[in-house]
Image 1: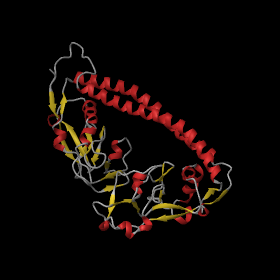
Image 2: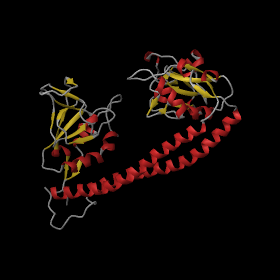
Image 3: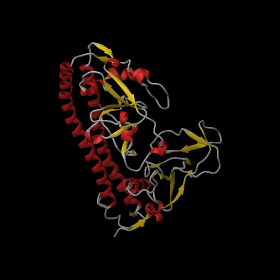
Image 4: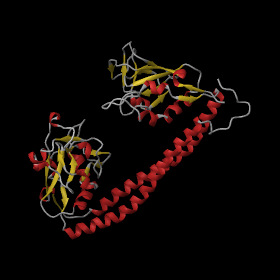
Length: 391
């Protein structure tokens, strides 16, 4: 029978340390290893401090603190960052074998993180994990089999992501075509904008009415992963800020990401809620097809105006007075409805293809986990007759 070992028999854990960092490499400095370094980026910071946790190429590094807890990296040399732990092997093992095992348990480790504000890996749970411990020859064969399967899988994933990119390009082309050669006016003639209040955290409550913040608006939809509440009586205290179904909201801080706009129209499940600072609500001055409005805001014509007008470097922002001067199509409701129908007809085809691509990517991820599961259950490879003994 194949022998299993707990990870505390395989490696020892040393946590990274906070050190004084510098941005430029010097004769006496070494790289300071952070999460981006584990992802393959070149080190951005260095340290000349002497009291640090040293990582060598043979060590395995794992993020222990924060949203990326469980992320694994190898083949790095330098001072280990304070949110990262060094896993140093006690036994002669194939490093990639143990790394694939840790990656396989990534979601498991993240499901049982301690701490509410900042997640943390539980070292005890990690070290108590059991790993199948075959001979080095079998470890090498298992790694080879995993990587052969992953190479094929990666090719499929690459093709699917290429389709995703082409679909996004097509969406932009549809919106560009929809609004080209139109008579234009200023947005201020169509709508006004209202922004919310910067409520203090001391005003927050555990229950009550939801506060609609920048984190709650994304690309074409709302998201409630992060929720803050105000007392229920704030509905009467701030009636002008109470949001309604079909309100159109836009993020005013960091409104763009990868040339996509954070704007959404509220649904029934999004209300009631109260408008927070740096989120803008459009208040229409005439009858307007709100889908037409949303499609235009997502078009290259609006986005180009926005990108030219953004202020700030670290936190780009836009203000109401500048948005109101943007150009906007000046057409009647019938024309707006016709354009909406044309856009949605093309988008429905795109959406069906996008749904199939998403299913393909999800299936690929399930297959990746299945490959690793089979590998660590000893089912992925059949050993040659001579490879029978474990350490």
